[in-house]
Image (cartoon, rainbow over all chains, first blue to last red; front, side, top):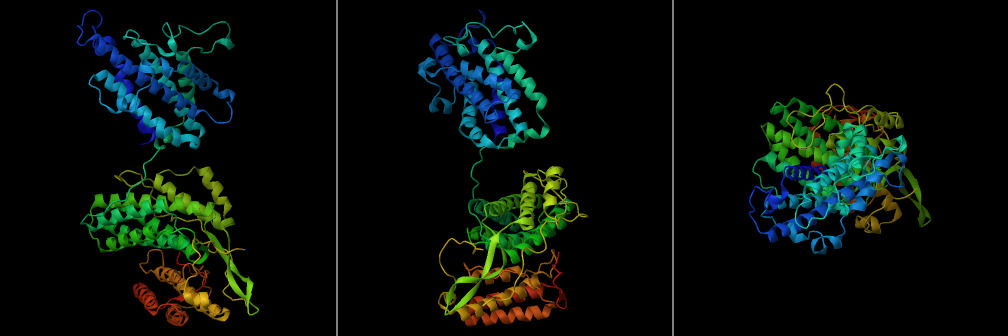
Length: 484
Length: 132
């Protein structure tokens, strides 16, 4: 799941809850003196108790969400509103020992479908909150940028506002305790002594002000946070399809999964780069036969990117840490299958482009990791080994850290491959900054995804402007002589 | 200056572990000659060519794993056919250094397949012709 999915589930459940009025009737008691009771008082009380236990979990989620959104390392004055809202949430948090039965909802109550509709909606709300508490919020942690924090603040404030409104609506439910043990409705108004004191003091006005404040600062790209969160470990599939392209897609998926699971040594990375070029050429042929011009262009650009990368990998990059054999084996089988395929149809080509996006993404991530973590090295020449045999120094290859244009060029390729996989193109400023690092780096234009591409969007470069990988033609110095 | 780190401490082909220094140097010279010839061939093919010389290079390097391959570019100014002949001869000569003859035969077959797929046999390789 992603944060966006948790948030959508919560919002859908809250909207359902807000559609319920005359709460006592839905709990089984007589409603407003006219609708007859349909349950016993004990049932109504048990349902109200259960709802309060569910509510405690959702309230905890709202608080944790806001705490996740607050920037670490002290609170700047600009973040005064969400900070105060966080204090209010903490003050009003239901204490476990004061909840019915002295606890919040347990696993059994969260996982058991409830017969009463209203209670079932509360259960859905709490289940979504638990998923967010356990996984998504933990995964978001330190990866948030400023704009994304505003999105989270707004979500949390709106959730708090909705819960307070619901709380007031449930005040006549049997044995109901208002949040924060209030004895009246939410605060009536703000203090009006002077301007600087005219700030929200109660939780409702604070929440509303926080929503308004966050809304003003959210930019469209900040909603990318909806795609973040905990992701299940990708699984291998057993290729069982009869069609060659379908089987190749399965093998390429497995190659991407293996690439995520184990780090490829330089030799395996080189093999994967070679195979990716050939796979892209075959995919381009199939796209042409399916009359998918945009896909064909994208496959061609992909082949060119890997061809440029091959030039550097085969002559300059070494490093024996890691494995990567499984990914190479799967990609090899996929290439053989694609070589035998003909007339695949549009759907298969589009699915092929989607899985190649996954491969690019995994490949780019590993390449970036290998360069940044100094698992890959560049060969810069030869030197005389320290140890001698019969008075003669052996010559040995010299490997050094990837630095300068070599490092920058490889990182740009890695970022480009991942950006294409995620469908996010880099901002012009960051691209310009990267290009200045290497004189040989040129623009790597990326266009719009082909129409109808499933799942992850595909970014297509225009045919007239070939992709430059930003790699220098030569890395280090080549010394073919042998020193003895 | 350092050697590329490796996971295991195994020392590649047995011949390199037990050979004398001169033997090792001769082996590396032949290996390097084969590599440079194949790299030269690979750099002459365009990005959309189905010719795959890199697979020969990978197989050759895998036969020597986990030793660091003598990376480097081909800086010779020679006809492609001369590079092909040199690669062929070097792959044959490596048998004298303990590399299994069967594996070398596979390498030569891969080279022949790539050569047959390559439409340009009469071209001339220069240091600037990188195929890009």
